[in-house]
Length: 157
Image (cartoon, rainbow, N blue to C red; front, top):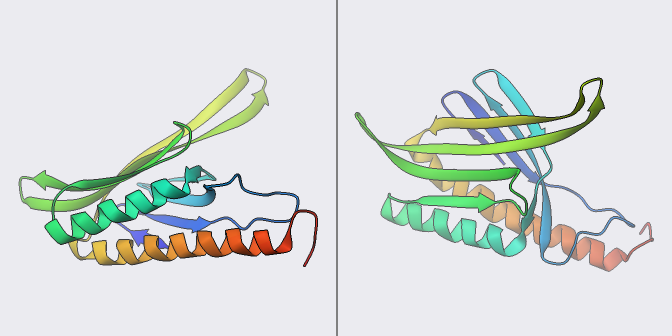
């Protein structure tokens, strides 16, 4: 799913699972690419499957009421994604904000962390597409989990 905003884009998908690399029960690994004001970042955050469902419910409520926010937390604090209706001087706008973090290996100066905090206005008519995209993402996560369960660990079927 791709979301285009005023100063960048967010691309979110479910990572495939392979034999010998099972996802923990009730968890989903995502692939997230963010481009914001010339900065680019990629992360593979883990989220609870239940959190994806709660995120979808909150997005649907936002769509129905045209107010509120929806937050998708990561299992760890190094990831978060938020959509919200925000009051601005020129009216109410839909915005996406978030944070992605990557931990790099040791360099000459020791370990380092890369953080991209981002925010962008989205077209106000884009929320139905976001809801549809998250719904499809959940279906894809369920499909990936079912495909992996059908193969079983250690097989190449």
